[in-house]
Structures are given as structure tokens and as C-alpha cells.
Image (cartoon, rainbow, N blue to C red; front, top):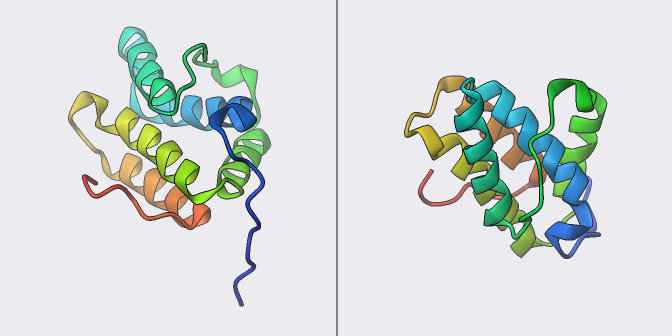
Length: 121
């Protein structure tokens, strides 16, 4: 029995902080080189129109805040969900290599959001 989630958020600005946490977590699992990490984060943030976002350090948030961030992404309107997910896939594709862990993280987030992955995935 699937619980229907009612959309709450219309713009990326509405969940700016939560998305920054999810994006930062993804970066910390994908890109180890600091310069590459910052550029990949910037690509993920600008994909959704968040031009002033900054990569957070692992100490700036908790795993509960990460889970809450993914939940907030699931509560977005459908077109915004697709843009947010595209931002995440842009991060993973930044280094031209998709590891099994990266694939699992993106696939899981997409499932929680109830949003199909972009066609390029």
C-alpha cells in the first residue's frame, strides 16, 4: 500500500538547504579531488538554478538531515523533481564514470522521489 505524497515545494529555492545537503552527500561519495568536487557541485546546483550554493563539509550536516533532504525532494512538484534529479545525475556524470555506488545512490533517491531517471541515465 503506497502512501501518496502531496507536492509541497514548487521551486528549488524552496528546498535550497535540503538539496545542498543531498548534493553534498552525493559529492562526498563520488568525487575525492577537492577541485573536481567543487566544480561538480556547482554543476549540480546550477542545473536547478541555485547559483549561490556552496559544497558543505561532512561535518555541516547529519545523516538525518540527508534523509530529510531526500524526503523534501520527494515532496516537490513533478517538473521540479525531474530537474533536481537531473542535477544529481549531472554530478555523478561529471567525471565521465558512473560507479556502482553512484548508480545505487541515484537509483535509490529516484525511487524515493517516485521520479523516473533522466533518459541519458
